[in-house]
Length: 222
Image 1 (cartoon, rainbow, N blue to C red):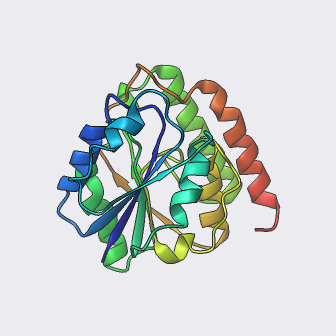
Image 2 (cartoon, one colour):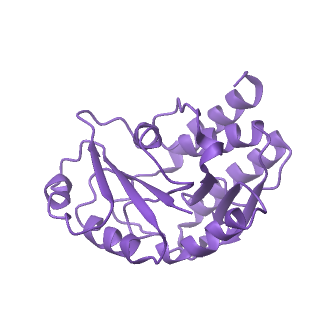
């Protein structure tokens, strides 16, 4: 099976070359569909130097649209059997890919979430993540430990035809809502995680749009 790695990128000049190397090193057939969301810090110039990365496709947004917009763009370009979302910093470890795709490859499920240990996060961020997971579980009648995880791994059929409306970090809630509303169950797999604190784009204020998205997609027709 071929893995499509979706990578939204915005102003990650300090980490983009290293994360691409780490993704490329994972021993699995894959493509990397990277969306440069109108970076202004030199990221775009660094990307021009990554021609040695195999099966890397770079799509550039002329206007910054947010993580959700970048994921939506990438979903329209994937060709793999399984898709995973990869942030462009170094919080997540691509070595976890093999464990994340295994339940899908063996037919146990169509959706796998990588569950983080949040001990390296600031306490209020960890609390917010746990609260959003609790709200998700209560609203959708499921048990999810880390709704906000970046490592959402899905069979292509799960995302085929899925249109994402959320433009920013609330896309995590939208994906979870639409996956669940479509009747797919989520298997959770522990992953390694090392939170960064410098140049962190996500803030506690992003929790409110996530709650709004969870409420919206729980009750509207999708």
